[in-house]
Length: 316
Image 1: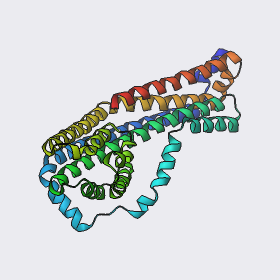
Image 2 (image 1 turned 180 degrees about the horizontal axis):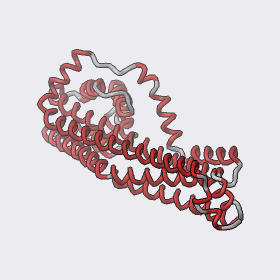
Image 3 (image 1 turned 90 degrees about the vertical axis):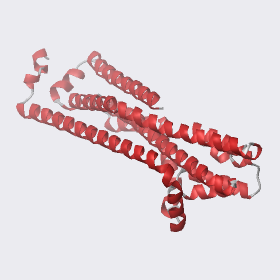
Image 4 (image 1 turned 60 degrees about the vertical axis):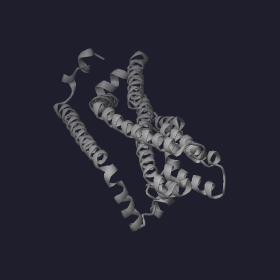
């Protein structure tokens, strides 16, 4: 096959027009989505700032309103919690994505489409795992901060750890932390010691919750003034942690958007190379050309893994 047959001039104008139109539409979509995410981050930052400014003065009023309204967890949300946990566990398993990639490659049984499907599914699974992990950590940070705020505002009034934890749990949305708090309250009602009762909260393996459970477990042996001061410092540390996390997310938004755009371009290019006749003929003409194609896919996949790992490390 002649080399000039591989040039863009060999493509028909209609095919070239649709390729350019598709890539342009993809670029407009990515830029629009990025602009929307930036706007959402800015609004979330403003709302968080207003909450931090006015929350301390309004906390008791909000607690009173919640108690009067009888806020209870949604039964439907509580019932679907186990199903969401199963999906989360599956999404965090790399074996699942590898099996799906191998299955897709076997279904295509094509020299070019099979490696593309394998790499895209594995990389896409890793990106999905990172997104789920980020959302879960954000939810845990928010619930942990809410629990500490609720506990700190109620304990000076009740002076009862069991009652305070039970009342604080009623204000939390359905989730891992609320379920762990309710289990700890049940253990306390069964007259277990504080260290044993706090094991469900320790099992969450969250740095803030580890410090909180250690503090609460020793409340009986700690001076009350020291306990309240330590609880206040922990609350301030949690608020600073949330603020730093929001700032890092906003700072990395552009980097993440650029990475996603490059990944989309790679997927579009490899798909075009697998489907367009001239490009496909070139890469399947010899084992050397095929290895070049697979090598480019592997480099793109490893690059995606590396960038995602760096972003997760910076966000932590």
